[in-house]
Amino acid sequence: MSTLPVSNPEAVDDAVEPSRRSPLLGSVVNTLVQAGEISRLLGRVGWLAVRHPWGYWGDVRDQMFHILRICFIPLVVSTAVFGFGAPGLVGENLFSLFGITERLGAFLNMATIREFAPWVNAMVIAGVVGTSITADLGARRVRGEIDALEVLAVDPVRTLVLPRVIALTVMTALLNVVALTCGLLGGYVAGVPVGGASSAALLNNLFNNLTTVDVWGSVAKTALFGLIIGVVCSYKGLAADGGPIGVGRAVNQAVVIAFASIWIVNFLFTATMLGLNPAIQVYR
Image 1: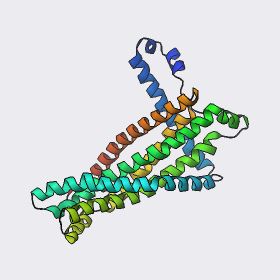
Image 2 (image 1 turned 60 degrees about the horizontal axis):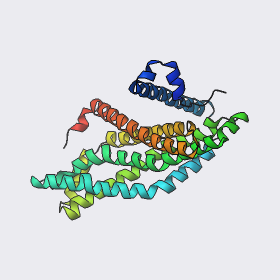
Image 3 (image 1 turned 180 degrees about the vertical axis):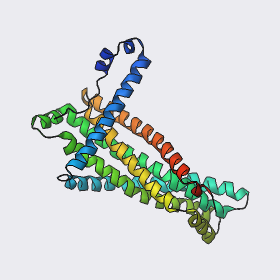
Image 4 (image 1 turned 60 degrees about the vertical axis):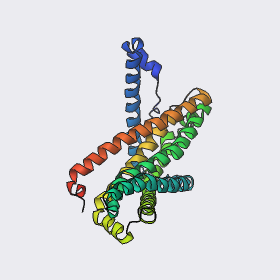
């Protein structure tokens, strides 16, 4: 059985002599090593899911219910308030200057469906579920439970990581539908009851600009976000050391890495989607 990916900065410093003299170089080397180990864990999770696609679906179901239970209310509140404030009130104030408040519908499509709702969805899930995964796996690591599973010839990646990653990937995509709905409702409230726009004109403008590429792109993007959160947080949990303090440090690092990865992937995904579908950049 292959060993679990565990980051070892001391080993990196021993192997790369210049990093002893340059803290910056040592940090860069350690970052690259961790990126490689995270990619390795991702490949292993994908291989286990394809090679033996049975025996873990009960755990996946339980994890999906757990994610729904702890994320639904924070997600609804966050996306509704964010949709009301950022694209809603800001867009309404801008368009009202030109007397075209009904055009807020097109802006909601661009801002909420393509960017804000998927982003808030990923941030909530990373902050709520990702931290719990890292803390759980990290506590198991420092207590020796992961080592005990390996001694018993039980693969911790297949038993503990795979169900969580699959559940996060699926539920992040499904919860994005909730995020889109609540975000659009928040923007609608800002535009119609607060801004005084015509309800029929705003909705007509929204659906005239809404395309299947926008919706499916948003769902696919959030599924990718969920995969990133699951793999990154699982890796940091398995790599935790140093007792309770090390677990807390791993949780902080997991959230930071997950957020940064989501921002980078979001930029690349949106740029690629707009480049491959230039028609969705034309507002009607």
